[in-house]
Amino acid sequence: MILAVHEAAHAYVANLLGDGTAKLAGRMTLNPLVHLDPIGTVMLLLFGFGWGKPVPINPYRLKDYRRDSALIALAGPVSNFILAGILAVAFHASGGGVAILILLVQLSITLGVFNLLPFGPLDGFKVVAGLLPVNLAHDFEQTSQLGIVVLLFLLLTPAFSTIVSAPVSFFTKLLLGF
Image (cartoon, rainbow, N blue to C red; front, top):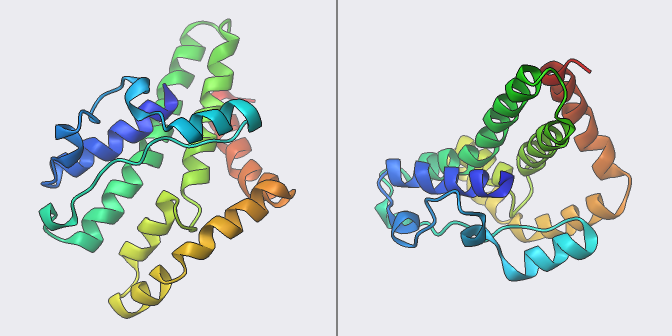
């Protein structure tokens, strides 16, 4: 569910910005099966870390590629934070009696925070590239292939927990009160 919201948000914003590629591919949906990447799903089941199928974007259909790409990328993490807020409201409305909502809030926040890290292929990389001046963005984009190495390092060391846990803890406390 959380992954489907994230990917559908990318597709929805791309469509709003003039690129209907994802919509035509059936990716503007909350059906999680449509957004599963076979290898990413196996990795998630085996190692607790995986990924979804990237939403297809046609850059030629966007009016301002740099700005629009950044907005499309930002839509995924923002949707996770909105979903976390909705789930937190549901948790409080239930009187705190639905424990699975705590986990879903934390997972949604974690996915949003993680995807905002500025390393390729994550959404944060595209957001930063869209915010930088053109000459710096070009140099920054040349580092995208190093991103996977940095991500592997982060995931295999305590660095990931150090970087991601503080904002996740902060937003969890903000939304759930503990």
